[in-house]
Length: 254
Image 1 (cartoon, rainbow, N blue to C red):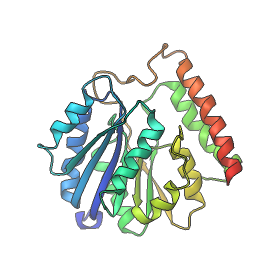
Image 2: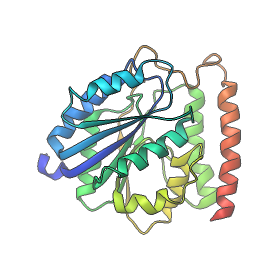
Image 3: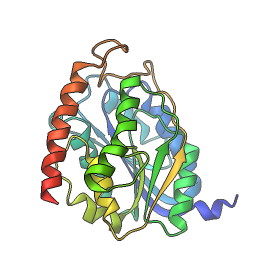
Image 4: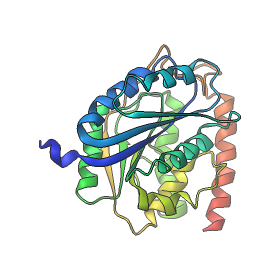
């Protein structure tokens, strides 16, 4: 394995975060160690969605400890994961980096798998996304993940095994025209981006990657915490209903 084949020049990480104070420092430190070897320059662009814990303070303190630069941003209001990740993408693009890497702040991926994404990027793929072959999530989230590929293939002809994976690497010029077509209030921007990627002239590669439980004190986190694991949280049910409505509107707009 030749590390030179994994290198890219500049990369900005687009990272949405909500109540990740207990695990985000270790995750970014792991990423930083690999990125220091594989890039000439890298940025961690963390958009805090008005966390109720001290996520903002933890992220800001990391700037003095990492090789990469930390750009800490806080939304004006709690906006949800979709709009927050879109804000993170835009802020990452503003760094001027050649490549944009998206990963969530809950730390459910292994830093070493960055090498896989970078290797395909260097082989000529401007869009490289991860495929979680095993998922460490509640059963209802795994069901949604398994159902989405079939739904998008029927509705849009999009062929992807892991539609919504938040471990994605884009060359900036390939990302911009895709991002410009995603509404800023989208609840599931990666689902829409997957559809647009399937229609893009740019080559896409999907790479199997490791998945792990959320880092920190709780493996569930606070986003879908209401209810018991045996039942689907009503918050998630409402979210899926609203996301479906947005997806129908998006399909009509194509």
